[in-house]
Image 1 (tube, chains in turn yellow, green):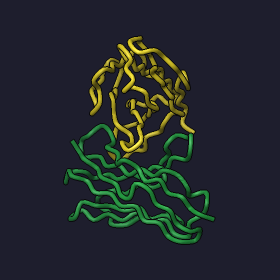
Image 2: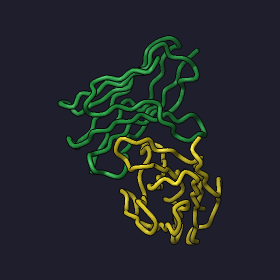
Image 3: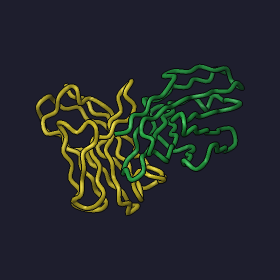
Image 4: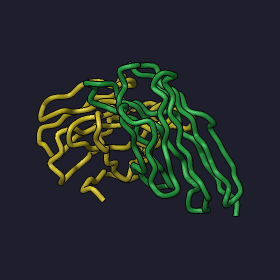
Length: 114
Length: 112
């Protein structure tokens, strides 16, 4: 398995609180992604990064922010958690972006907002 | 952006039978089509992919076909086994895009 680790693996938080999820890779891959997985919706891209300090929005970016200060770390922050953000969050990495390259996924973080 | 539709959402087959999952995409510039398998409680993992210059690709019991004119591609699993039970996702990437656009997934159940 690719060296990609998400933390925490599980989290329960209250509505209105900020939450940060961490993705750490040891593969030195350029691209890093945050997806959320919900029943009936598959995997939807929240944000991605194509280098240190270089990020872009995905299709469901509202309410989320990201940061990448080092190649190996990509942080996802829920600025003020809402119940609609209850989901399983997956980080993924890729060496050369979406085209023609395999994306390796982390183990996922199950987030519950109560 | 790209829109990928996947059918069916659930599929049950008897062990030994074949399973087919179909996807359509909207962006004619898409040129890379991977398939991911996600077992219960696990991460998605790539099982096979196809590029736009190829019409079919096979790897043991799994195969993928691509029809660029119709903008659809399919996953075929033959001689299904209980360990094939999982959620399968198709995806597409337009030329120059930096990310994958996923379908909504198909839950395949292989009945022993």
